Image (cartoon, rainbow, N blue to C red; front, top):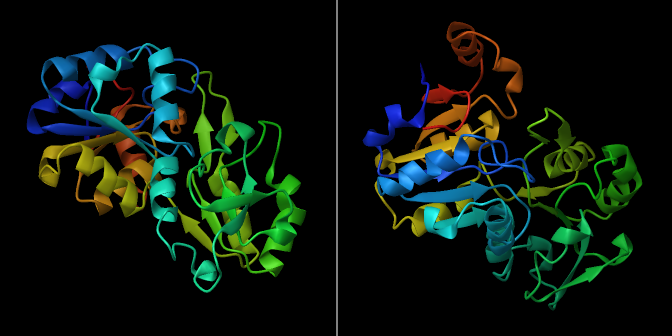
Length: 286
C-alpha cells in the first residue's frame, strides 16, 4: 500500500482503467475539480477508461449525466452501471429462483426514485404498486433524500413474511456530495431486509458480474495491466481485489474524514481495515 500524489505516478504501469463515478468524477451534479484534466491526459496517452458505477440505472442514462457535466464520450470506452448489469442478469430466465416454476411475466415491487423506475423496461416483468401482488422486490434506493429505513419497515416486513427475494441494484450504503453531505443508498435498505430474514441478491460492486462486463468493454485485457479507481473500501477496493485488479482508493469521497490527516496516519488507519488498496490518493488528479 502506497500513498501517491497523482495518477501520473503510476499510470505507466497500467494499460487500462476502471473508474468509479460518484465520489471520484462527480457527485451527481458537479465534477470534482481535477477529474476532467486527468481523464483528458489518460485519453491523450491512450489509456482507455471504462466507468464502473453502482448507479441503479441503465448505462445510457449515466452517460447523459457525464455529457451534461462536460465529460465528452471520446474520453471513455463505455459505462457499466449496476442497473445495466441488473438488466442483463434479470433478462435470463431463472434469475429469480422463486419464478422458476411460475409462468412469466414475473411481478415486481419497485423501491426507489421514479427516475430509476424504468431500469427493467423492455424485460418481461410487470411492475406492481402493491407488495401483496409482487413476486420479488427491486431495490434502487430511497425515493427522496428525506426518507430513512424506518419509512420502509412495514413494507419490508410484509415482503419478508411472504419470503420475497430482493434484487438490490446498488450495494452502496452511502454516498457523499462534494459539500460533505451524506445520503444513504439502497444497500442500507437491503441490510435492513436481511436483518428481517429477507433474501437479497446484490448486483454491482464488489460482485463479479459488473467487473466481467467492464473488462469485456476494455477488450478483456490482462488483469495485471488494469487499474481500478474508487472511493469505497468495500465496493471499489474489495471488488477490484476479488477481480485480480490493482486499486487506487480516493480518500476525498466516502473517506473524506481522512483528507486532513498525514500520509502516515491514513496508511495506519487503512492497515487496520479488512481490505487494503494498492495505492491511496486524495482525489482523481493527474
